[in-house]
Length: 485
Ligand code: PMP
Image 1: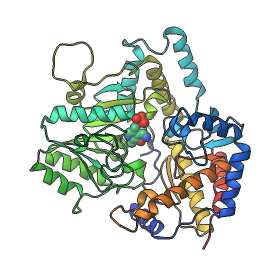
Image 2: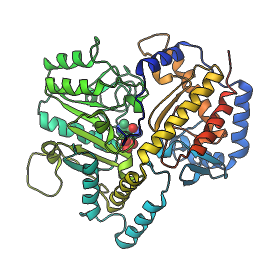
Image 3: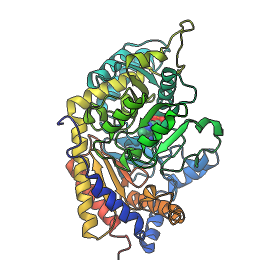
Image 4: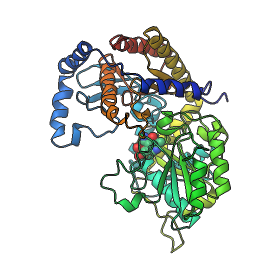
C-alpha cells in the first residue's frame, strides 16, 4: 500500500460514535464577542473584497460563482495563488486548504505544468476541435496507473462524466425502467437525475427545484454504509428485481462527500458482489479519490474493479475540462465519438472536451505527481494535520470530530451533514448548525486559513510540515474562541 496516501484506514466505528455524540450534544459555537471580532476583521481588512463582491451581487447571484465558496459574511476576492498559499485582493495571505476543491494536487499554479501549458499555447492555442497527441498521452497515463481503465472518453466536468456514466449504463443494461442507485448524501454533480439525496441522506428530491419530477423517478438512494439494513443496498436491489431492475450502483468509494460519512473498509467489495449478483453495473465516482488517495485511485487501494469510473478534478491538473469516463472497453466504446453512421451509442460530447491544453496539463500533472510521490506526501500532511487538531480539541475539551483519509481531512464542528433527517428533533437544528459552520469558516479565514465549506481540508504536495504546524496553531487560536463547558 506504500503508493497510497492513506497510512491507516480510519476506525469507522469510533468516528461514527464521535459524530453521533457531536450531533446529540449542544453546539459549541464561537463566543459572541469573538464573532464580533471576526466580523470586524472582515470589514476592516477585506474592504476591497466586500465592495467588489457587493457590486458583483447585482450581476452574479450571491456575488460568487462557486458552491464551495462562503458568502458569509461576504465572499473573498482572490488575487493570487501559489503552492500552499492564496492572497486576497486586499493583500491578506491564507493557507490554501481548499486547493480549488481538489484538482491541484501539486499545489496551486505548479510552475513546471504552467510552463508546458504556455509552450503549447504558443504553438496551437487551447483548442482545435480535432485530435491532439496529448489526448492519447493522457489516456495512456491514466491507464498505466489504473489498469481497469481499458478505454476512456474525456468530458467537460465531473457532472458531465457522471451523466455520461448513467447513459452508458442504461444503454448497456437496456431495460427502460432500470433504476440508478446512489448513496444518500453523495454529490455526483448537478444533473437532473442526480440532484437526489444531496448532502444529507434521505432527502430525496428536497433540492430538486426546477427539475421535472419524472427525471428522478428512476433514481434511488440507500443509507451510507448500509448493506444489510431494512433500507440497505441488498434489500433495494432485491426489490428492484421485481420492478424493472437496476442499471447501476453509483458510489463515492470513500463515502458521500469524500467520506463525510465514512464507510467500513470492506463496503466496496460487498457492493461489487451485490452488483454481480443482481446483474447491474458498479460505477465508482473517483472525481475526488482518483489520483488523490493514490495514483491507482480508490479502486487500486481497495482492489476493486468497477465497471465504470468517473473522473474529474486532478485529471486536468487544475486546468479546465476536468471530466472523463473510463472502464470496460465494451461499455466505453458505446460512447464513441466522430461522425459515424447510425451505430447504437450513448450520445455524449462537448466542444471543449479533450482540448489540448487540459490534456497536456493533466498528463504532466500526473507525471509530476508520480515523480514527487505527491499522494503519499499530501497524505502525510493530512495525517499530521488531523493528529495536531485532535490534540488541540482534546486539550480544549471540545466535541469536534477530526479524522482524515490521507489528504482528505474532515473538521466537523457542527455535524450538520450528519443530522438524521428522519428525526423530527433534527430539522430545527439544520439552519443553526449550518450557520455555525459558516461562522467557523469565517473565523478560520481571519486566522489565515481557507477550508472547504468550513468543515473539510484538501492537502496537496505543497503542504510542508512547517505549513501544517503553522495551520494547527491557527486552528487552535480559533478553537480558543469557542464556547466551552
Ligand atoms: N462527483 C464528486 C464526487 C464530486 O466531488 C464532484 C465535485 N465536487 C463532482 C462529481 C462534480 O464535478 P464537477 O464540479 O467537475 O462538475
